[in-house]
Image (spheres, rainbow, N blue to C red):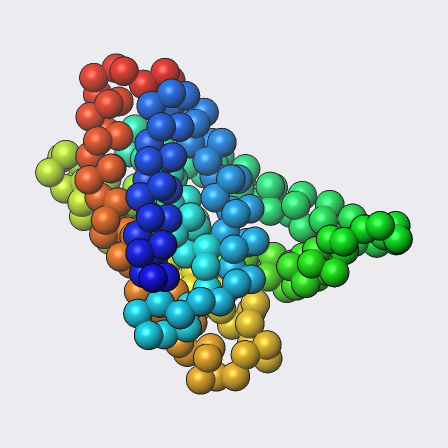
Length: 228
């Protein structure tokens, strides 16, 4: 059943990011970046079993942040993609700071969410550190790798290469850095390796499946039907 929910999550994410791009152009992608980063860092605190292995949630929505920066690179250039990464970084820092200050407030006798908030956001500093390091390193690699392949193979027929060659390596970097920083000592190595493998494989699958949406985004942009 989890696998069906995973497919549903995948479809919903692709639909959401394409709606944002169609309605608001690059602004829609700038909006999607903090949405995906914040959702991913909340969802990642939950572990599930997918295809017989333990994995964390958040892989799909986080992987779509790479799709957003690749669309920005393809349609508007490297500068806009770097701007989106900066927005994502800022949003994660702000969320971590504000939610941890919120935990400092003493709850009222009628409160029923403090314990749950502590469970989720009490882990956030370490998860956020891992995410910030992994996010910056992997996204900067992705932007530069995509730009490199775009200059080497600028033709539309090579868009699949630019998209996958940059993202799949970047997501490997992201997975290794994030998993070690966020979960080393929290889980044993038997679980940690499962999380690493499943996380990367699921991100790799999302990257492979998002290629048609890259072509669709480029077509919309070339036809002038995108807002900006």
